[in-house]
Image (cartoon, rainbow, N blue to C red; front, side, top):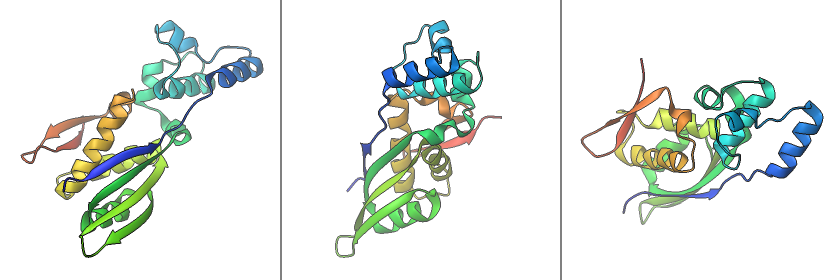
Length: 176
């Protein structure tokens, strides 16, 4: 059985409330950087960019995503994961993510709800997409990374490049 990973908890931003209140309190729009870049608010990458603009007026939306500091802590995600018992144990011990795990000794597989901030998931993905990680673990975190890329958060991996391995997974290498 191939490992399974399903996103089941994803943040939802109330853009109307966020933009109205920040405009009222700050006296300026937190979407200025997005507007200047020709991007519309609406996705989670835009939200991180707006948080950056809130803290540092005039910052580039792209640069905020490439060097987000603690801003990724404001987005929380959860995935259901199914994989061999020993691989899930590796994930629990090495990822830093919160986990609720149920194992089936007779079937050899475990299911877990793994949760954490986007910063936690980014760190776990970097730590688990290495040559030292078991293949199933890399497969899982390759899927995690691809999910975040598909929802527009690819710039949070700016400092890393994918290097394909013989087993068709990839490791992350820090760009020098």
